[in-house]
Amino acid sequence: MRRAIYPGSFDPVTNGHLDIIERGCKLFDEIIISILINPEKQPFFTIEERLEMLAEVVKDINQGGCNVRIDSFRGLLVNYAVAQEANAIVRGIRAISDYEYELQMALMNRRLEPGIETVFMMPAETYSYVSSRLVKEVFQLGGTISGLVPPFIEQRMKEKLESPR
Ligand code: PNS
Image (cartoon, rainbow, N blue to C red; front, side, top):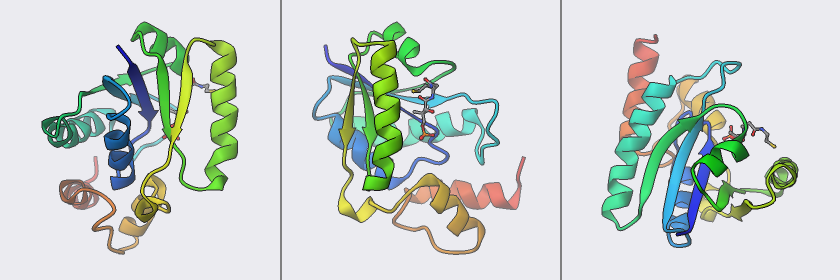
């Protein structure tokens, strides 16, 4: 059983994330998409909202033959991965600028837990500039984000702007 953790903030999930999940599901028997609960960050969407949005997105992916679960975690990623009996951590790399930070994390995680491999995956070029941070910024400044996130996520973002917590 090859099980991978795809960790992140997913605030919100983008089409770039979905592209990585779909590619990853060809390599692993199961992928657990897991949101880091980070009390130090002030997210756009709450953990509950992000879990719910991911669950919606994953419905379609699983109907397409993938085996993807949703979860959240606190603390060290490798401890969580061991507890989930995962063999790998999946991370998407868009440009060379992502690489340095990702390499540091991968090597630190390997030092902490040599039994877990980090697998870097490249999204389609179409999404090579897409990040949750830019999607939020463009959206909040009135720009269009269609094609960068699933339509219902765009809708959730509209609702959130209209009636924030
Ligand atoms: O999508 P993000 O925000 O870039 O994801 C970063 C994430 C969640 C993968 C990273 O911050 C993480 O793994 N945090 C958990 C704490 C941890 O294990 N830190 C040591 C990493 S070397």
